[in-house]
Amino acid sequence: MKRELKITMLMEAHERLDSLFFEHQKALLRFEFDTALALLGEYRDSLLAHMGDEERLLMPIYRERIKPEKGGNPALFLDEHEKMRAYVSLFIDTTAELRLQASPEKTLLNLLDRESFYKRLSSHHDIREREILYPELDSVMTRKELAETFSKLEFPVHSRETEASNDSK
Picture 1 (cartoon, rainbow, N blue to C red):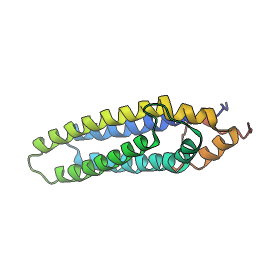
Picture 2 (picture 1 turned 90 degrees about the vertical axis):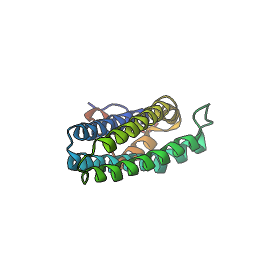
Picture 3 (picture 1 turned 180 degrees about the vertical axis):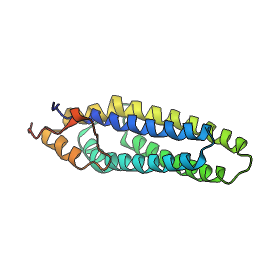
């Protein structure tokens, strides 16, 4: 069954990203560092694709058509993206180091502490996108623009309910 497209449907991408990160952390807890690193690489690639979609497809429209409220400045979203990229890069380096350590417990605990902070940053970012960015875009984009945007996503929404409707507004 087709449902009208909405930018808020991109929250599905956030759920998929959260699930990948959780699988990475489970592998860390089992000391399966090769698996943890592979999952983190998949998470990074997916995260970069999703953030790239937002920056390339959504931010230009947001900047042009939205007068942001408190917490909705485009620079805040982009700054958070940069912080998230830096953290994930650090996590990849640290996870790779874990594979080489005979006693990785201290490094692992430090990594998990940093990942906990990252998850709070990511959660805060998700809330601002869910409550500000996505609804604001839904209010100004036409059905045609939405369909075009969804067709260009590098990290697409896969739900059967989110198939594009080609109706124009």
